[in-house]
Image (cartoon, rainbow, N blue to C red):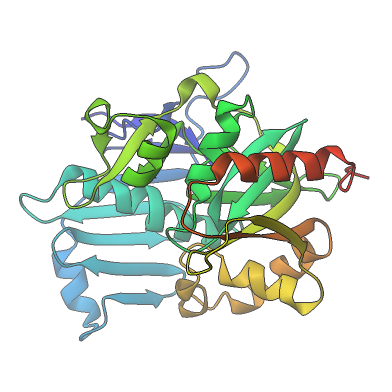
Amino acid sequence: MLPVHYVAYGLRWSSQIRMPELQIAPKDAGTDFDVVEVHIESSDLTPLWEDWDVGNDNFVAREGSLFFKIEDTGLFLMEQGKRIVVSPIPGADEKKVRLFILGTCMAVIMMQRGILPLHGSAVVIDGWAYAFVGHSGAGKSTLSAALASRGYPLLTDDVVALTWDAGGRAIVSPGYPQQKLWQPSLDGFGMKEQDYATVHAEITKYAIPVQHYFHEMAVPLGGIFELAPQPEENHTSVQLVEVTGLERLHLLCSHTFRGGLVARQGLAQWLFETASRLSASVEIGRLVRTGAEFTAFEMVDRITDHIRKGVHTGQ
């Protein structure tokens, strides 16, 4: 097929692989439609993988490139922040192949280009982007969906792409108009699983189209909140506390998307410098949620009250 041009994370992608999750790049007047930052291609990578002779390691980095293998899916190569080459195994689940392209592959491309990918979601509140980071299952997408239902547009889900504007402010670029929610979140929102497709065949996580409340422009970053669920606690409450000192730096590094691949690529110093700069420039907090109840809307109230009280003014 002829390559299709998409936009995501502030970059223009040309892909030989159909990516229905992404937005088609607009043919804006006065712009060069042929300008592409990253090419996504499909090719047989098996001879190259054998030539690299990586042994039992499924992830290997060399000279600005990262190569990895997913046993039941295929081979993936990211080169110099400019190219993704994919070699699916015969019969591979196309959704799962795309999931790795949209996640690990794009995050590695961002690292190679000096864009910090955090593992989280972000929404727009009063003209500022607020990112919610946390480990898998912490409730990042659920909280963003609850905020979106209150009229705060979604900026990105799963990966938060951070760069800097000409004035030195951290900015968040829009991802693509889809959220991924687990079954309990669908239940909490009163949504029916039969109305949505799963992310891929092996898990009960659902792809939710969000075009109607997706924000398509980059927005300055107002704050970062780590979600720290504590379901083992019997009482139910939501607490918002400030993160201070060196813990701020640790939080940013630990929630870098696929952070284990940073050092492999020789980018540890870049991450430290970038996270240090970010730590010094934005509010960083922690949302502690206890109990097993569905508390997304209580968290929405806690966050919006905090922001509206002027704790962050953008000054």
